[in-house]
Amino acid sequence: MGYLYQVSRNDPAVTFGWPASGRERDRLESELLALLDPALRRAAELAERPPLAAAPLLADFLALYASRPLAQNKGGSGLNDSLWLYLMARLIDPALIVESGTWRGQSAWLLRQACPAARVVTFDVCVPDEGRCETAGVFYHLKDWMTEPVTAVPGERALVFFDDHISHAQRLAEAAARGFRLALFDDNFAARHLHATGAPPVPTLAMLLDSATPAGAVIEWQRNGKIYRYDDSVERRQAARDLVADHLTLPELASVTHHPPGSGMTLVRLQGQPSTGM
Ligand SMILES: C[S@@+](CC[C@H](N)C(=O)[O-])C[C@H]1O[C@@H](n2cnc3c(N)ncnc32)[C@H](O)[C@@H]1O
View 1 (cartoon, rainbow, N blue to C red):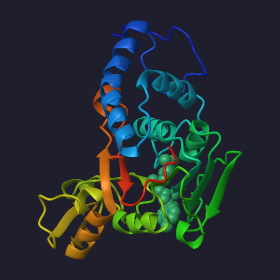
View 2: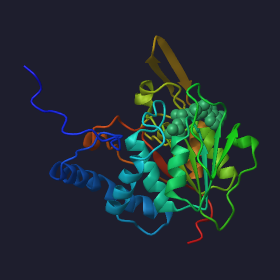
View 3: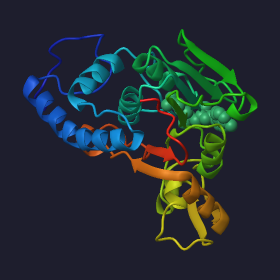
């Protein structure tokens, strides 16, 4: 027996899966807004920014995402993480955005679209074999961000986005030393979920800030025929607690969108004087 549905038309503008009939689309989008709105309110508090309604931002994002340069971004942000990245960029509206982990260039493109007036600087240590797309107005560096004098200027909003699988403990200290008060961390896996990704940025924020795991514990996980071991350190845990004023792990959207799960993107306000210039 054949399928009980058929292709009703071809549309080259269709670049991602989404309901196409109004009733189903409205239903899915209202379920999504029920997750986005409270998280956006909480993120606005954390970032000391005026709250924004999610509905118009979601509509903007979906129109933009349809025109992204790479239909497939395997190894980089998919729809769920891209949506949070876009929302955080729009909410914070920084004058400077630094990204560590360019990969194929899609997230830098998205940041540029979200904040056309911002200076967007992206770092990677290599270009993937698949190549990358470069967006006008984005500054690309093939090096670690610590080799370039990029600092947040007091009184100007700035955001640093770490999507490079480097230890969150290290990146947190670097962001603080360079005057950033707001940082977004991808791949924030809890100790019990480290097996879910290759090269997790251990110790992650979730590990550093988890009071249920005794400081100094040994943490092991298995993946692809290997057992990995991390020896937790009391000093690293304390250093992270000293640097983090507030944090918010953005809700997982996969249960609503049924796109592949994101990676626990987490917004952090670092200790120090606010530099938001509100
Ligand atoms: C998960 S990918 C980034 C995905 C990208 N942000 C996106 O959403 O499309 C991680 C990237 O981090 C890069 N990376 C590894 N070490 C790095 C470092 N020290 N500085 C900057 N990028 C680094 C890798 O080469 C890889 O391209």
